[in-house]
Image (cartoon, rainbow, N blue to C red):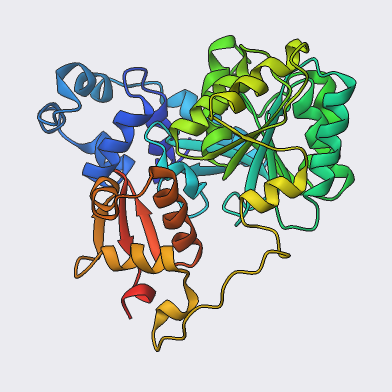
Length: 374
């Protein structure tokens, strides 16, 4: 029998049907650890406004610990890395998403907090044009330190993953099932190769089938862990459009490749562009320029200052100054004070995290690190 470690209780917390990701993160904010949640008295749990009597009873009556032990054995046997919401290795970009998963399972060697991450998605039935442009765009991202995320599905997803392997680009597949299987099975050789330069990520336990209702959750991870969503061929309905809308709701950049108005598989991309939900791109150079990742574009030299601000751009300096004498602020307060679009603020906060000057905390709160305060 496994010793009931903190990981044991973290996995158990995800197994309680009445406790979803949002509620679980509120509990972690209050109790600070999963073990404290399970050890809390029922009356203490009931008093929390987000819990109540029904959820409190569900926590105290949970007995399916055999399933938890089974999952821990699976992780140990197959070298699966658990990433809890508060772990440093957890994708920090997901902290900006209220509905992000409490616990992720990862196999591979990718840095899920790499400085530059994009996802490439699209139809499962691409045309020759879609295949070609996907391969060209992916190849154009090589040598720019960009990690490419997709969903390992038929069509654009697998073309992007395979192009990444060909050009030695780190690539991560986000799955709508457990890590004990690969769906579709035909993509298992590609998935295995990705473990050497990338990996596989999911928030589903082993033995979870790729059921239809799991794919929207998968799409939220794809959108949330990326700086930008790139759509290559999509109809007016489907997972790619859903992912693009989710990315917009997270204040992330969305880009789309246009197509002929008569092509059904370009209708979704054309609509995103027409309604200003996505920027139009025709190649990798457009992505690099829009994201300010193109080394050919020189930024203005910063004004020399005898402080930490010498290493920051103007936006980053302004956000640090918003904290004032307080070392911790809520995202809503920062947004109210700077009067910026949400995407601009969250992107700047993310860059400050990359500089190790700001730390994201549960509940959409941010804290200046000691480096920023010194």
